Length: 64
Image 1 (tube, rainbow, N blue to C red):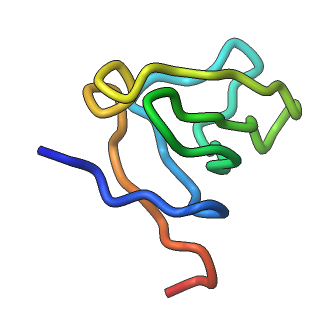
Image 2 (image 1 turned 180 degrees about the vertical axis):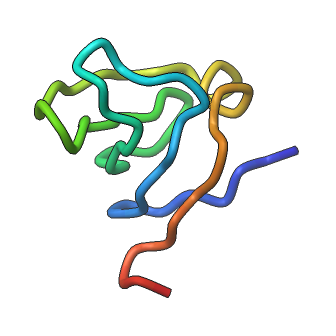
């Protein structure tokens, strides 16, 4: 399953970040995906296959 991601999309993960947040904003695309935690502001880079296994849902940018 290939995820359709765009810059600005919100991603809900299956497990919480240590700060307790589940929502991440996509900030960079490529072989690695850049994400910013919406609760604490932490920035991480995850390999695409790793991210695809851990995403629960993708919320498109623009609210719809």
